[in-house]
Image (cartoon, rainbow, N blue to C red):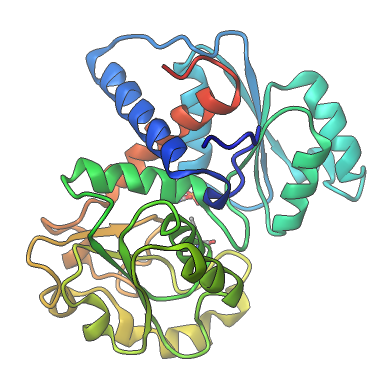
Length: 310
Ligand code: CP
Ligand code: NVA
């Protein structure tokens, strides 16, 4: 079964088959880039990138991906468009679609992205909202497979805050059959909406643990992210007090599968959620993850902007 959405807003909207096809495409596009083979699949296409939060990887990966695929991109902030204030989301969707072949948006309110997608005939790609970061986890799936790990049957342990990354990992459990353990302090669990949805549809086990050692035991992938996501800065001090037991450090890593890989979507707060020793150590694949945003984005762009995906 293939999904008929024009957009890329949540991994929950995509079937396993379609995600696998996109991962295969990302692998081919990465190989082309490495071999110096041009992939002019989006010639003449322009992507508008709307940012209401800062970004390094998401901005670079989308803008560079468009250029490497023969197209172009525009960086648009709220200073230009006053999203929903200067103009309604509906009108922005209608107008931007008369100019742009696709819209990537990073913003706070997920509902606004859905509203934009409903208003815009052009495809809308979610470049991060408060509850989801599908492009990150999509390219992370590529990194996991590149490391020789199957997406079915492994255990992924996520340490820290139950944030947008965790929610997108939970949506991925509905497509691929890995076990997913979230280890974090009480009060910072992933939202029940995502937990319930994943538990209803996942084939693997989904576990919430208050014990970091138990969370990482036997895991092939150890994942972490900031304790304080964008928009939560006022809580940074409170969070810094409760999260330290869930820091990914050498002692904790020693309890995981000896060949476990360590992942972080970045930006990292070295010395908080991850130590330098682990982040710069032999099990870390964090910079491969960053690079794979480019190759993952290309597959998503080719799919959404309408070029052949073979
Ligand atoms: N991982 C990620 O999305 O990074 P940026 O916030 O820099 O885009
Ligand atoms: N959870 C983080 C991810 C940053 C890429 C945030 O939302 O700030």
